[in-house]
Image 1 (cartoon, one colour):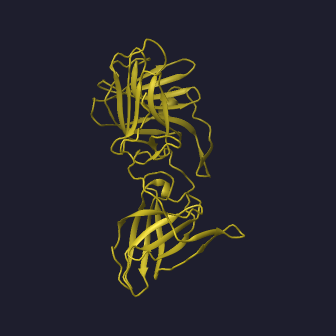
Image 2 (image 1 turned 135 degrees about the horizontal axis):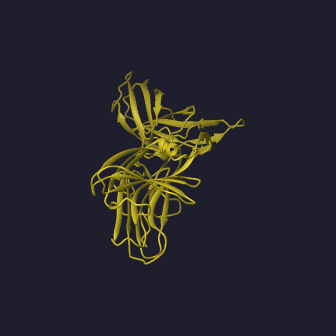
Image 3 (image 1 turned 30 degrees about the vertical axis):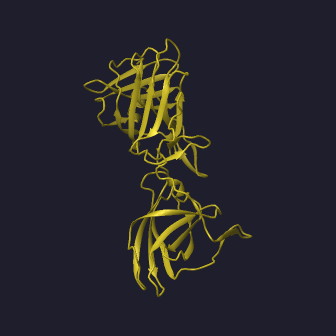
Length: 353
């Protein structure tokens, strides 16, 4: 079996880190102390921050810069975290390319990868550098914070990272979920900032699912919005489909499946048993992008299911209340499926109010 997400030119966004000529030490009180070797004649402050892609990190900032010296400067920005002597450079989305003496400009900067964004609740060292001289000025930025977290992190699936200890990538904040039996080839890859899932299926006569999937422990989504391009559809909406592409919301013995099907209108099928299933068959056309929203809370009410109890969710060391479910996007097939491939591309999986 080919490992999912092989390194085939998919290192998009990963940037090498370089050494910074400063020393960061911990003081007696535990506070971070900066020892500057050189100081740029400029003043700057963070005027706002945001998390536009819902990864629960400050991945975009507005920084106001004033050139207080007598030489022109060309600003660039980087951050440091956790005492590491490394520069994490940020993209400049807007702002003056050059500041003459006395001039001021506000810069909108964004993290090249979400891991570079400061974790909520942690102090961050923000450095302003002149690209021409590499003279810099640093400032400790107070912790960014939020009392709430998105129900689904990285819902647009546009940020990816290498799987620790492996040679393949996965969506940031998501995990990999696979099932194979030695005769299938599974694909999980970044395809134009979307998640491409595929099972090339060598026929078996028995056994469980063969599956390529991504999953995340998320907060209960009252309404689940999905944008995807399915390349394989269920032809007959029954209780036990031989193959499927879609999203599962699972907790305790409850499973809601949103499955792409060759049907004219949405159909809902209930499957009782030790694990109870609600299968929502969504009309789709092979190879065409489709958007759908499913009222998960309403389905729970209709079938007498109680929502999961609230628990504590830990994100980068911070605690949030949530109702835990497992959100799994998948392409899968049983041995009874006769075709060779099950395939889908997910563009967005998010919760709506």
